[in-house]
Structure formats: structure tokens, C-alpha cells
Length: 157
Image (cartoon, rainbow, N blue to C red; front, side, top):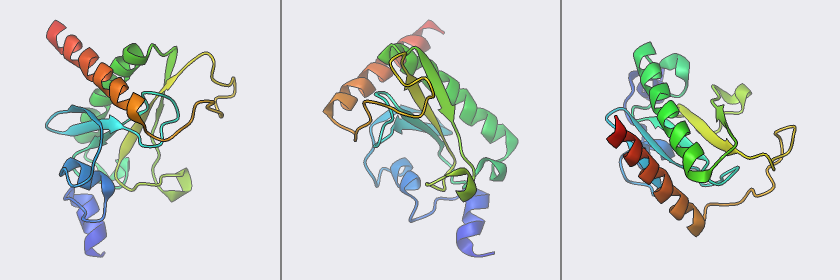
């Protein structure tokens, strides 16, 4: 096993991983949430407004490389982000997407989950997103709204 594979398994940062770079603040991202174990930021190619990614701060390529407790912690954050995104963008529903491996269409090999707001105007088959675009200024406002919802939700608990 090469050192790159070893570092995936042990949870250490990988130098050429863009998500590790975001965790280390060496790459830009519109961060909406962060705790000791996870970080969430808006996708730079959103399928809909408010499309967020939730990642482990430790580098693992796929879920099966993660200790079960860390998988659980990741999905606790997914649930929290999902509720905040849904409220912030007034979504009618949410898709949670998570891929493991090239055959499953994973394109960034750092474990992550997509939180994708869905609206009744989206196509019935769920395959086309009429407003698909690249990240822009309106997304910064959406990120602010998500952070506000998260702060309100945390104050209530």
C-alpha cells in the first residue's frame, strides 16, 4: 500500500485533496457549519440553491474506510444541515446523496454527503434541475441564511 492510500485509511490530510485543503483553510469555500469532526460548505456547482456538502474533517476516501462512530457523527451533521438548508431556502424536500468509489460516480475521494434542496418545480424524475448554475453572489446570501437558521436552532436546544 502506498502512502496516499495509507493516509486515506488513517484519517490524515492528503495534500492534493481539495476538501482537505478547505478544512485547512488553504482553499476557499462558503462554510455554513463547522464542529470538531465535520464541516459543511456550499457546493461550487450547485444542483439547486442551497446545495451543501458535509464532510468529515479527517480524510477518508469512502465511508467503508471510516470508523463507525465517525460515520455516525458525519450523519448527525448531515441531519442538522438538512433541516437548516430546508428552512433557509424553503425547500419542498431534500435529497441526501453519498457515493463511494469511482463506480458509484464519486468524483472527490474524500468522504462527503450532498444535501440537495428540492422544489416542486423540479422535474418529476428528479434528473433535471432547471436552475443549475455555478456558485455566485446569491449563494453567499443563502449561506448566510443557512448559518442564521443553524444559530437559531442551536439557541433553542
